[in-house]
Length: 385
Image 1 (cartoon, rainbow, N blue to C red):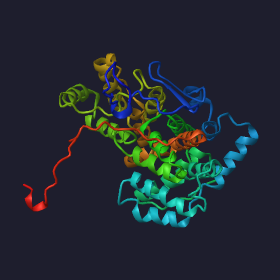
Image 2 (image 1 turned 180 degrees about the vertical axis):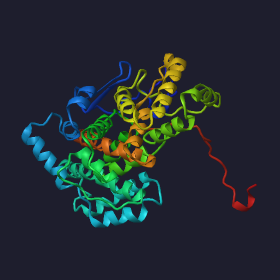
Image 3 (image 1 turned 120 degrees about the horizontal axis):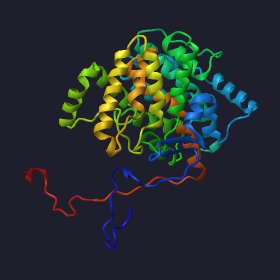
Image 4 (image 1 turned 180 degrees about the horizontal axis):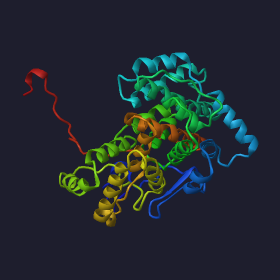
């Protein structure tokens, strides 16, 4: 903690805002200019020209793969994509009885029991576990979505791409080219995003020299919260509740008056329009054009009103505002939106974890004590008020 001027009193930075806790080459977020890049590649370029497998390799290994590296990496992902039958059975028992994020957290933790090196902390073993988790994450979430929807689980189809296979295992049909591209793009733009809460959780855990399964279980637990991954569920429900563009102004005014948080707006880093939201907005408009145009028009009106009212304060749409709309239009249940986030973010989580342990230092921040200094006199229980 820093000192304030000549005072010896430590300064508390609540939420660690603005504190630099690590160095990274994985990803860069420029909140003032509204830019996001992965190892120097702009997110718009990657979303337009790349695919998730290539981006995943880039994040983990630090460079774009050549043809041989790409082919070998894709084969690793496909060969590791299936789950032990016991994990499928676990998902069948719990999915539908609890939130999908709870099912995902439990399933990832359970996966560790099937890995003979689950307690190994050397970088080589951690890398093997990392790739296994990247490979199995879409299968886990797809199975959870199927059971949550009252459907039978579908095993991976190794002829499909990472994104298309996830779509198939979740929804029971192969996506058309546009659906496949939307799914691929959604996973790419969620793959990494600075020292966010879930990434920080993963790094705190991996810094203890725990295994990758433990680190990702920590990350999933953190992602579940509505102020992080769960915000896209809340944003879509808000748009649906407002119902039409004509209702937007009155509804927002009432929410602001009640000091309610407007989900899908504002960001701890971005003070301009989130570049990921710009990409998803285009897809949201496209996919709702035929079946639910009113939903997009309502969202667009909410955006207009919010920017007019709060844009000068740096509050603009973030990635959560339009992501839920896209997922819903594709056919995903609302409760699965945050697990989809995890399918994309898994590559960023493991990439940063592997990077951190190369020069590991245990995270051990301090807290400013503001309680009773004492020493207080101890009273037997029968003498207390």
